[in-house]
Every structure is written in C-alpha cells, then in structure tokens.
Length: 311
Image 1 (tube, rainbow, N blue to C red):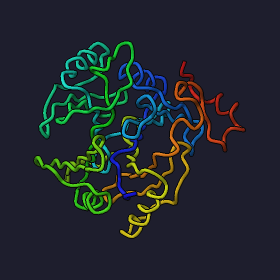
Image 2: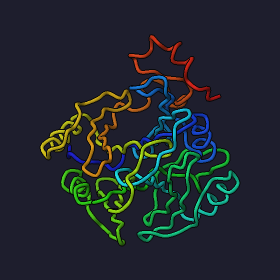
Image 3: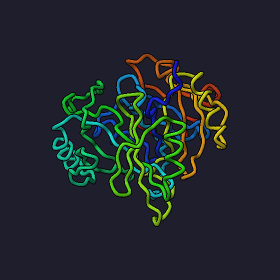
C-alpha cells in the first residue's frame, strides 16, 4: 500500500453552549450527530462529532463545547475557515435558510473559480458553502428539510491563516504530498491527487495580522487522513525525521492519531480510517447515547451529572 495522506480526516473546533451547537449543526445544517462522547482530557466536557451517515473521513466536524467559554479570535496560527461542498444551484436555498434562522452570512462570491457563501455558526466559527468546479459525488446525509439536491457533501477545503506560509507549505508538499495549484494574491491553494474530495488546503499569508486567540468559535486542530496504523507510523517517521516533535500513537477509540504543531502554529493531527464509528454502537443508532472511553466508564454517574442537558 502506498503511504499517502488521503486528504482531510476531521476538523475539531471549540464551542460555547453544547445544546446550541447541537441544534445548529443538526437542525440548521442537517448534519448527523455521529457520536456523543467526552473530551479524553476533560471528561466533564462533551466531544460531539457530526458528519455523514457513517462518519466517513472528510465529513467529520467535531466540537469541544465549553459552557460559558469566552469567544476566541481567528487569526494567524490557526485554521480559520472551513468549507463544505454543496451541489450546484443550492446556494440560494442556503442563503434563504440562513435568513430564516437568523444566521449571520455574507453574499455569494467567487474564489479560485468557485462560487461560495460565507457564514458563521452561533459562536462565530467561520464557515463556507462551496460549489466545487468539478462537482462532488459523495452521498449526503439528508433530513426532512434538507434534501439530497442541496445537502452538504462533506469538507471541500480548510483555510489556514499564517504570518508566513513557507514552512507550512513545505510540510504540505514535501511530507504530505500536496501540490500548489493556484495563487490569488496572498491566497494559495494546495491539493492532493490521492483523493477526489476533502483534498484542498488553502493558505492565507497575513504577516501583519494579529495572532489568533483560542476560544469558542475557533478551530482547535485539523486532522489529515491515512488508511491504517501502518501508514500512520510511516508518517510519524517522516515527520520526526524533518525535525518536528510528534506524539506517540494515541488511541482515540474511533481512530488512531499522531499530533504535531507545524511552524505556523496550527496543530496538525494524522488519523486513521480504522476502526471507525461502528465500533461501539450500530450505524443506525449513531449518536443516540452517551459513550464514554473505557477509562471513564466507572465514573459514568458523576460525569452524566455534570454534563449539560442536550434534550
């Protein structure tokens, strides 16, 4: 098997109120709640996963919702924008939907030859709906209000804002196998040909901008996808050989991970496809119950007592 990065695996962000986050992503955006679990390092905080029907890599957006969290500020050193692919002709539907739900949004614009609609979630996380120039054939999760003709397909791209892109770009090209395909001013587009979708990393170079500050409405890290643990550990060797401090393999229940911080300040994760989201509940029941990592199961009653109510 070729040792390749297969585009994006997931993106993790920070939110404020858990119930507000859940309602927005399931009811307004029409994503599926895949997992209701807790932060491995802070079991009194949820870790909520959203995506398509089965939690396919490249569709998974996750959140650590901290009740009463201060709002963060997006800026250099962060992933600042998340782009979802949507079908051609769907942006007017989404614009009207955002107006109906009083969601902050901009106007339909164009970049890199693609139409997009910018908007923010209730915490101010910067999102975009993009009509990919080559389409997107992934099967979406649909709801009564959001049909297959307009539903999101999964990630199209993620944008990293940096004071200087050179070192980050070198990781993308020399270690991860991405190629620079287009530049528009201070906006650079990198793509991997290893997969058809969730294959784009955009870099914005903003040398004079104020550095981003973490908090609700900002991204915590982005995760790149590999097929399995064997490939994961090959990339560990590559990253370590390039001089970066990378973690040992970590078991995240639904995937295995490595983490390192790239020179621009963004926390990078590399995550496996295996074992997937069906390991602890049937696919037709994903997200229906609180699932705890084994080390916290004995403390379930105490954890359930402090977690915010989602019903």
